[in-house]
Amino acid sequence: MRPIHVTASVIALTLLLGACSDDSNNTPDDSGPTLDGAVDAPTCTEGGACCTVGVDCPDQGPVPDAKPEASFCGVLEDEAGTIISGGDVLVCDVHTCRTDTTASDGSFCIFVADAGDYVFHATEREAGGEHYGDMLFPVTLGASEAAAAAKIDLGKVAVPLMGPAVKLDPQGGGTLDLGGGATLVVAAGATVLPPLKTEAQVAFRALDKAALHPRLLAAVPAGKSLEAAAVLVPVGVSFGAPATFELPLATGLAADTALEVYRINDEDGAVELKGQAKVSASDTLVNPSGGGLDALGLLLFVK
Image (tube, rainbow, N blue to C red; front, side):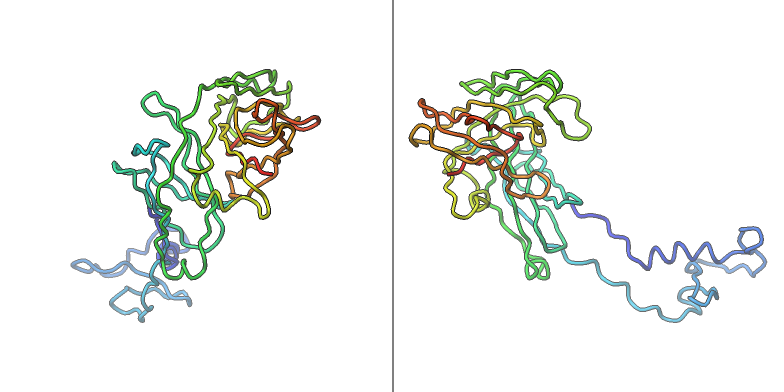
């Protein structure tokens, strides 16, 4: 979906039309002769004199072309490879988001003009009784790609099919049974919801790390080994006191192996350290003593 661009010359013409009037009463001067036929609207020069475009105005030069835009394109599907049509996808920086809705074949293209770092975001949605979770990863538009209005192929982007959603009481906290052996224990009064949200329906899904998008894999901090990944929605929920958890994310690592929990920031794509985890005797991930999970979202568990 391309944004609407308004050129500086159009804005100037609109403002200056108001200047071509009688300053005493703010009404147009009707004393001049009537011209038969259509003529261009009057405009004004910098000196304040008015003229008629195409009749007695000097050439103002061509209107500059809109800035070229590059595009991030791909196909949205679920983990089974089923096409998702009508899905909302975004590319955002810290100030604005550009959006598109996937076509019947799951395809999308999002146009971006300026070089820089962005986050791609396929938003959480309900479809046919199925609950799809957020999928996000950082993307970068280079200066040469922006100048060439390049088309950047993201390929296939798979979104996870979530487990049951459980209501979280922001003030009361409590233990949330997320199904399949996944639990989350939130302290009372410790939940911070995203703006304009009054409640959260929390859901969990383990991700197959071998099937993660290449750009998400590339976001793993240098020198770290990705051991597991998961989505806990909704993104943007954080905790003033770390939440304890047990998540069925098999790693094959020895019991008591320490891991770090990184979260992909849904606003700018930054990879942020958001907690600690350790491997339990049953090869699930739990919080270590004195640690826990600081936020929900797309989580990477790394060694």
